[in-house]
Length: 609
Image 1 (tube, helix red, strand yellow):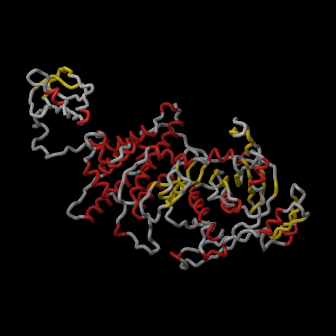
Image 2: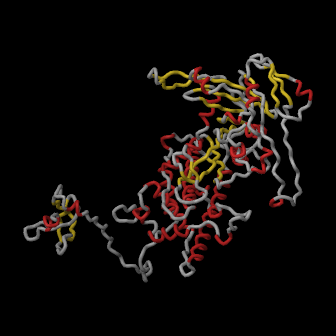
Image 3: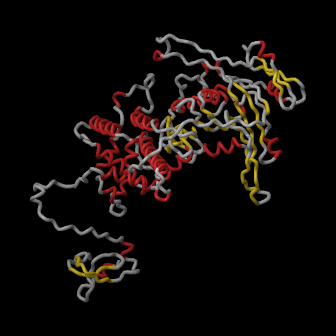
C-alpha cells in the first residue's frame, strides 16, 4: 500500500511521511533465536541514551539507538504563505518504536470536571429554540425573501418568522406521521389536520422552493481560496455549532462518522458500505456515550490540519479539530475506531491530558510485533497479549485480543488487566460460554457507541421530504439533529431533577410537542377566501357548518356486504343523484343519508352497480 495515499498526504509532504518498516528490521525485532537485537529508532539521540539497554521479560536485550524524535518547526514571516498565516509545523511521524511485554495495571486518571445540575425542566420547545435560535430563523426569513425576489421580482414571497416556524413544525409532523408524499397531508383521503390547518399547501411549497440561508450573489467562484462547498448552508451550520459547543462536556467522549442519506448527484456524496445508509453526505461527530453532540464537521472532500497542531494525516487531523473544544488538563476520555487511531494522535492528545482508547490497524504500530491472527486463533477465544512503549514521554499500551476474530487496541490510560469474563455463544457446544475479556475492551465497548446511538435516534423520525435542491437534505438533517439534541438535554435535566423514567417524554412525543408549539404558539391560522367587510362587532351570527361527510369509494359502495339502514336522530339530505329528500336513514357502512321507503328506495339503488 502506498503510504502517501494511506495517510491522505499530498506529494509535497512526502518528506514528512513515515515510510513502512523494512521487513528485515521487523524480522530482527521479532526474532527469538538471537540473544541481542539492535533496533535503530531515529538519528539525533545522544550517545549516553543510545548506550542504555532495556531488558524484556523473555530475557531479550533490546539496544535502543537514537530514540529521541525529531520535531522541526519553521517560523515564517507574517506576510508569507497563504492568507499571511504561519506555515504548518513540520512533523515526523513515529517510526520503529521499541515495544516490550508488560503485565502491570495503569492507573485510571480521575476526571476533574463536573456537569452542572439542573434545577427545573423546561418545555420541549424551549430546548429546541435554545439550539435553533431566533437570530438563525430571522436570517432564514431574510435570505428566503431575497432569493424569491431574485428569482421573480414581480412575485415577492413576503415570508415571516411565524411562517418559517410553522414550516419547520409541519416538517416535524411529516417525519412523525411518515406519509409517502407531502401533498397527501392536505388531500381529503389522507388529510392530517395538524398539518393542513396550519398552512395552505401552495404556501408551504412556495416556502420550500425558496428556502435559503445565504445570498447566492456573494458566493466566491470555484477555484478561489474563499470558495466554500457548504456556502448555501454555512449560516445554519455555524449557528448550530455555536450552541452545541456551549453545552457542558461529559467525561467519556467518542469520535465517529455518520451518513446523511442522499443518492442524488453531488461531488460531496460519499459511499460507506459499513453504514446502514451507504450513500450520502459524511459528517464527523464528537459526542458522548448517550449521543449528546458537542462538535461536528461536514466532510467536503478535504481535511485540513488543525490550527496550532502538526499535520498527522487526514484521519488524525479531523480528531484534533473536533477535540479542540475539549478543555485541557481535566482528564477527559476519548474513544475512536481504527480509521482515526494512530500512535501520533494519541501522543498529541495525551500531552493535553485527553486520554484515549481506540482500535488500531497493526501497520500503524511502528515496530510492534504482535502475534498473528492464526497464532491467536490457535490459543483459543479469550487469548490476548499486551505490549508497551514510551513515545515522547507518553506511555502507550497495545493489546491484541481474540474473540470471534482478532482485534487490536491502543490506549494511553487503559491496559489488559484486570481482565473480566463475558458470555459468548459457542457454536460447537451449542451453549453460552465464558470468555476472558481484557479491561481495555470493556471500557471501549461501554463508551464508543454514542454516534451510532445518535444515528438510530435520528433515523426513528427522519424528515423524508423530496426536493430537487441538494442542500435541502442537509438542512432537514440538521433540523432533526437539533430536535434529538434538545431531547437529550431534556432527558439529562429530567434525570438531575429526579423525574422517574416512565414520566419522561419519548422522542416522538417530544418532537410532536415541539412541532405543535412551532405551528400554534402565538400564531393565528389564516382563513382562506375574501376578507369580510364587516367589523368583528357587526359580524352576523353564523350557523356552524356540519363536517363534510366522507364519500365511500365505488368498490366499497357496491360490495353488497354489511350495508344496513340505520335510523338516526338528525335529519339529512339524500345523497342519491337526482333525489333531494330529507330523511333520517343512513347506511351503517357508508355513513350516507339515503331514502328508504316504498316510493323512493334510493338505498337499494345506491348500492347497485
